[in-house]
Length: 263
Image (tube, rainbow, N blue to C red):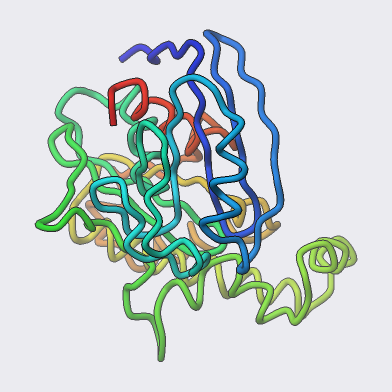
């Protein structure tokens, strides 16, 4: 399938550490980022969205129903918000909307976003699977160890285990610090276990990965190794694990596509 063309549409990717605003205009796009954090709430979001013109789609890392944010663990101040934009979607679902561009017709696939926490969206027979209440794909809530996959595999989990912030972690990794490397590897291994559970359940033709946690050295390698170890061999042999071809704009692109389609 050919990639869909967007002109004059804005996609907004809201995450636990940043708000990424991308204006798509044919083959070109312009992006800017604003820091967020746990205290970022509905009023902050409304202020940043207020100056945007044209059709706007917003993706958030939480549960969304009928344009309202039902719950958002990484940005709790958004709970209950109903942003005044043309489409509001879960961030993993937005990534799945973008992923449909090159998925073979009728394909079964999954998109997994590893950012501050872990999100996923499922595609069955060429259609995004919503579930009975619109919340299908909450991979981060998969039980893992004594907690959840979110608590073991996301970027926040890495920083907790390393005992530092992101810039410090980057410096420590560059120096080969053992604690930093172990924190990244443990989180990647947890993600791999989650990917294996997903693959064993739905037998996808591919799983597309995105999100900022993939940038940490050793994270993806640990995830792939654990995926290969835990996934049923006939599934692992045929399931393609790939990085999203849309890079950092994948979620914003999906949100923009949702807005262009009318929500």
